[in-house]
Image (tube, rainbow, N blue to C red):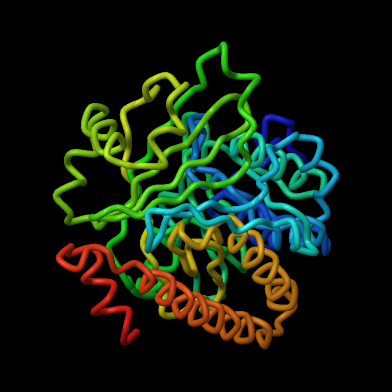
Length: 385
């Protein structure tokens, strides 16, 4: 079987059999598909999202360089000319900016991504490994037979298509749709949401954009971050709790800009930018995980397995890393050896526990607004987490 370069499956018929169907074609889904297909398995990657608009998740820490190498995509990644990230500037616990540079990191610098290019690069590499991609393909039914075979149905052209597989990888993001269908429970550790705005540099200043650091600034009811992206874009994100009064205000362009104007460090970064091109939109940004990451015939990876606060800058890194590890466990699972799946789940639990500890310490450093409900929650809850 083969796929054309649009990612559209060529020759996939109802009743086609695969060793693995991956639901969700973000970085985690691509990493799973690459890892398993490289071992010679028959893999189908289902991408429900044919949207070419901006995607949140625009940075990689230096540690991701080793993960890209492990996937075998370093050359393709560098050819896409993503912007280097030299470090982080933060105003946290103090109005002053502190710098954390990557210059001493032996793994090199980080990256600010053009997510559309990044995802497209991974999809192209998936195809070179012998896997197939269907898009758009939103799963509408998934049932497991008494023989342990999954029947996966999704719309294809004017009709529905059903394929068969022994294994399914849930890479559907924070909703963890497939895993929850199998009885897994999502555990939420906070209520954080992100309000996202995208800006464009005014043309006279496009060639002068030289800042390569991510800028973070805490404020009375949450915090902000901003980063310059490839193509003269700048992402600006406001983080607060879902039940905060600021959420309703930040959902409108005028409200978002007025909240932005109250910042000391982030607001000047958009001085030479046009107003937000699109109305700001909200997306979940909380820390959460599944109570179990695998079961009979399925495994979860990326945000579907566990998701991190953007403060950690670990979202895409975790997607790639967990995708590789899930893929390695599936290589054995396809042959009937389930031992690595238990090890995979244990590894993720340890990572998430260490992450929570680091998150709690960092939030505890901000003590300037003792009456703020946002910061009270993090002092009262995180102190005993």
